[in-house]
Image (cartoon, rainbow, N blue to C red; front, side):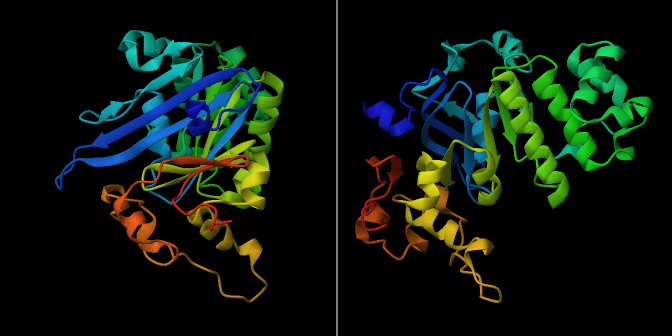
Length: 326
């Protein structure tokens, strides 16, 4: 029961991914940096889980840890790291390679720099998918790129960011139809029109294939459109996890409230945006709640003791004063 509460596990849905007590630490000149601290969540089959938060909150590190692609020197430990019944933390490198791209796909956040600039696109797509030219053309056509199949001998810089992101989605999602797709801010560098197209494509593919998605973003408006549940990260911790409608209607953690209050859509025209005072810098190393220096409700307990996950209605949040934060 405690594990289910901490992970915000959906009720009857079949579980695909379970993460409990995930920690990731990077070595730095200033000493070990705890980039991810005691993160727990689950992903059900067919579910889209969003992870949001400011830059440096640990969102992308969580995905990289799941793919076992952290840089050398990084230390990872977890109580549970299980995908489709398999223990990811105990797999050898060869077994993990069999999962990457086949059962777990990754959509990177920077399409303009994710492919080699000195190799024609078709050669890279062959290598990444293991498919012949006809099948590659079919994949690209299915993601709306029929018009570029005649010039795949061009180099990545000769394509737009939206075209490259669609190619990467075709590789990550369609080439081998993985059960789990990790989308690491796939729309961040794209303009609003192309961003909407990419989001619609990801949702359409999810509905068609029935896969699960972990969608990382710093944009709450984007997450609201496509995610079933949302996890809010701050200072390497998952500070709140709730169904999307619940999180937007009744945010429990003060940081979630501050993020929502900073959204332009919640302000009248000409009204000054309500920015969050202070900075996230240094929050990973604080002894208590990482958000305490920026929180109006923080007291001595908040600065001293890390809050444990607590359940309130449909939400799980880390806050000593969660009732006050409603």
